[in-house]
Length: 265
Image 1: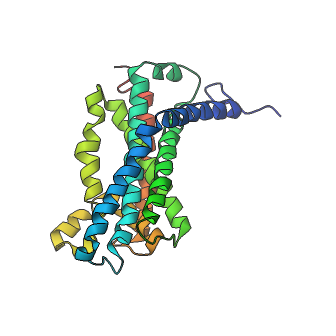
Image 2: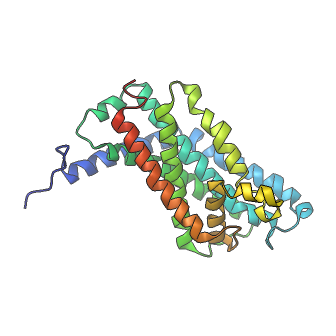
Image 3: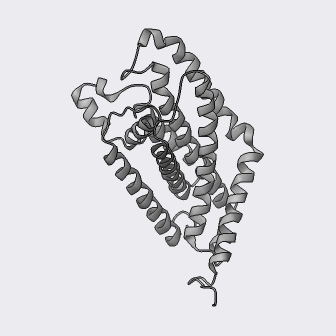
């Protein structure tokens, strides 16, 4: 039986080779500069635990849990968010800036393989950092995974979402300064206001209502539920939102690349 050939003239096996090639390139990049990509998050999160560990007796418990135990899932997911996003936005923009992205775009390789390859690199870095930060967290507090499937689903959906978000940022970026605008003025505020350090149930009515429009709040609470069994939001809503974000952002990336936005201009 003849092997099925795509519209672009590539077989499924050839597409798989293209995907694995992009992924290997991303993996080599992450490991080559591991001092920049892996070590800083571990140090940063250690400082968070040291500082808040000293304050936990004054702060007391949060939602019935020790304070460091309560913030640990949020800090883990925060590291996954920032590293997944940062990896793709820097890698994809560098490919665009150095003009070797054009070589992939003129090849028979489908655009969705290019998107998946770079997003997978972001997911890889996010998960590596997430495992390291989890290991660090276990040195500061008792941490267990109550619902492994929820933890895995939330981790992957969050990493994919922000990897795709980083790609959109890179597509529109015209200079290196543009790469840091969204993380500084959008991503960081939303992350810190997403319930990492507090329960939104403590907020006054209007502020709690406003917080419910923050998508990161749902991701952090879903992950916290998977880790320690408590949440401030409806889990079904959180799962639906994460799934919708993945599909919508992937579609946006596909449309932007097909139209050559930020690449052919």
